[in-house]
Length: 229
Ligand code: CA
Image 1 (cartoon, rainbow, N blue to C red):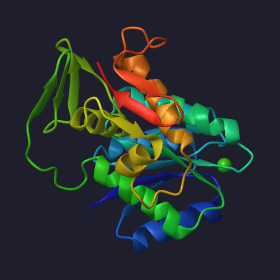
Image 2: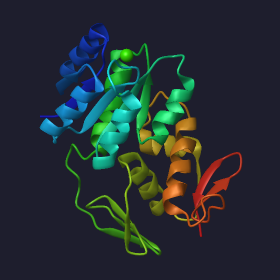
Image 3: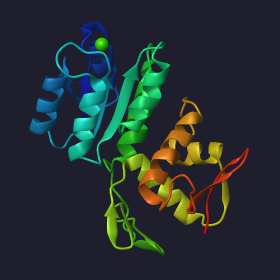
């Protein structure tokens, strides 16, 4: 069964989300505060995608839940549910390891499209057999969806992995931000281009020797990015 955790303290919003996910074929696990969400994740280790509200009652907010889930699991897909006035929270949420965000109020179609996209990336569906792409110092294993740099494993989120895979499939080619968005988030993604830049910034911190002077992911001004050496 395709399991999704829904963390939302407002019962009306939570049941709206749950009903629509069930209708789309997902099994839902519900939580009303952060502690309960972490407990549910422990009990349901096969959960592939989580939706996290930010403002919550109790000790920990949605960002902290995101950090704690991510600390133990780089594979799970994380979508933050944000209020319209929380513009800055979007960026902060992504920097703490979320893959995506949905702004309230959202339509059922928008929500399930986002969950579907992450679910596919989180390996919830069959991952086709393939092998390794070697571009020293990087080695990408497309079977295990892992990346090594000089033999050292680099922990990537599913979104980060998809971006690196896209780059390594197109070495030396300038990719526009729109192309990256389409390839990684899907053509039906309704979010903003900025999400590309936020993820690139995070990737540079993980991959570059000097993130301030990137040599692997270079900026193509006014256009996008290039995996270049
Ligand atoms: Ca709330």
